[in-house]
Length: 364
Image (cartoon, rainbow, N blue to C red; front, side, top):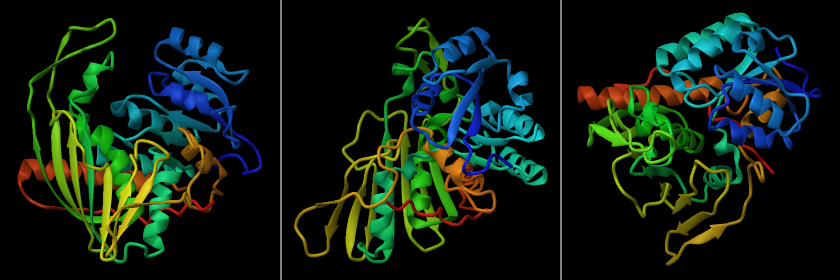
């Protein structure tokens, strides 16, 4: 399904909340895409976004209208996580390709249902994060693939923030089931680890819940207290099929860290990988026997990338090939994260049922 690679793929956005602005800003430069419509439960917001869109001719529609619109080839699903599966399944039933924000769905079971429905309907599903396609993670991957660190042994991934309620005007879903630091920020880190080191076969996790309430710090609800009903600090150990071990440290409780976002350690060198929530950044290497770190030149990835590059890559990928931000990759990442939380509550290691090929590298 979808338009030929030589034709712009016509995109309809469902959900024009906070993250939509970053995608909208990219449509001026994404050569394989054309934004044609937006929809939201709040029609006033949809109309406002359509009128201020950076490209002309964008229509404001209801969700039902957009999903049925023959002028829409792919639905860009920017709804909240618990709505991802519903919108994806409705778009698939309408014969449309789907590209979603992370995570793929709120649960692995929903993700399996979405991918099965897409396969039966002959449409494609892809999913953020696409930050791993930027020059930061891709340059790090090129270094690993070239053998600069030798055989990979281990990795660490660290994300620390005292919480999103300080800046987000409606942070409730971050602290409800389906939220938390792992499911919110983990997709960036776990997708990067899978891209760098390959699929995961087994996980073990631990988690804690430090505060029962959070106070909203900005916007019209500032001062309102909301409950915390999910784990807000999560650690995990991932065993990759290659034998490498990755350690996750994801927190909405801790204050700050000086740890690198991601480090990869091999027999011959260690590698510092930039923030996987961004597209760029320095990749630094320290080789065995050397006394200091060296910054590697940019050698791979989409230069100057921004949100939406994964959708553009998806649109440019022929239907018989796997897009880099594939639904299978997103499902594997979701299963890893869900299994870390399952392990944290059961106290037992969990075997990962799914697997995936590393996405094709982005060469310059």
